[in-house]
Structures are given as structure tokens and as C-alpha cells.
Length: 221
Image 1: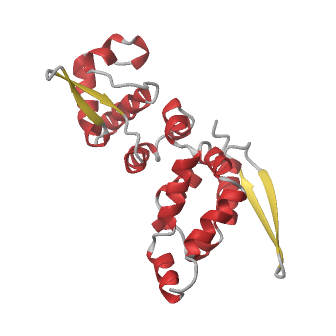
Image 2: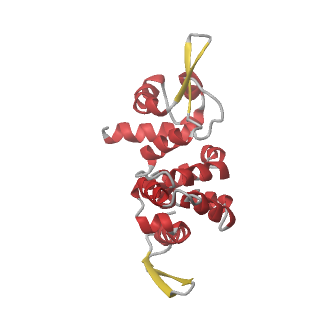
Image 3: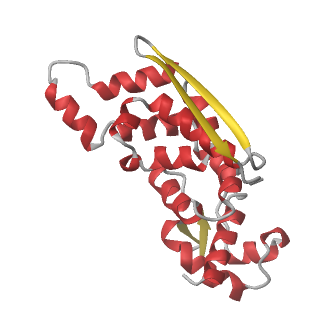
């Protein structure tokens, strides 16, 4: 996509994050908050993102659109905005708050346990409880699915780990709490004033202490 078309597509996505129901092109145009001046502006943006939208017909005449409410659909939309300056607004939007529930987080973790690494682990111990089930049960207690959802809502890096588990290393998959905490902290330090230093200490039972120090800061709002 050309830059201007991409910006228009993201602008339309961000407008749709404010809508809880299906809308038509006319609905978008007549809403001054959409930022679109005409149908001619809306149509190219709609064409760019139509593959990820839920669409239905109104009285068999007019198409109506909304952002998807499924895990896969949300992941597709996230892929379109993740590299834009709107990603933080997207994650904290009404749309994300509606979709990214504790059940959504549980589904994301189930998908982590369905990766080839966990499948291979489970095949080695066919008579025992699946390692993935134990992992999900552990995370349900500490830090809990609502806490992970809260991290997801402000950290694009945490969201990316959960939406695309194939990008996680074996260590990250088997130590997800540490992975999410460090990824979250790394994301947050980017939003701090330049020169910020963040220290993290982890005490790993019977293995001593892990000290991490992150420094940086860009002042991202």
C-alpha cells in the first residue's frame, strides 16, 4: 500500500474501534468524528481492509461493516496497525477492551501450547498430564488472565507475543510469566523519558538471582 492509502486504512480502522455495531459507508460519512469528508475517501480505505472486516447486508441492498470479534480476526486487524503510531490507541480502544477478555487470553495461551514445541513435549510423556495444561493452570493463578489482559492492553510487544506464539523462543514458551514481565517492562521503558533506567530482579528458586537492567526511553505518549 502507498503511505497515504495505508494511513487512510488505519484511520478507518481507528474509527471502527469506536463502533460497537455494524455501520455503512453512509454512517461513516455522516459521522463528523470519522474524519472522512466523502464516500470517495472512504471507499479506497475500505477496500484496503475489507478482507479483515465482518460484513453483512442490510435489506439485501447495502453492505454493513464492523471489526471482527474473533481471535483470528482481531489478530488480522492488529497486524495492520502494529507498526503504526496508532497501535497504543488501538490496544486501549473500546473495541480491544470488548474483545480482549480473560477468555481471549486463555485462547491465546492454548494456542501457545499447540505450537510444535509443546506438541513434541506432550508426545514424550503420553501417560502424563499435558505440559501445556499445567502451564495454563499456573498462569490462571499467577498472574491471572485479567492481569495478562491488562498488560496486553498497553504493550504492543506483549500483544504480539500472545497473538503470534510462533515468534516465541522455547525459553519464552516454558517461562511465559518471565517473558511477559520482561517484554512488558521493555515496552514501558520506551515510553519513559530518554535516559530512563529500569532494573528488574527475579529470584529463581534454587537457581539464584537474575538481574536485568533496561535503559532507554523515547517519550512515546
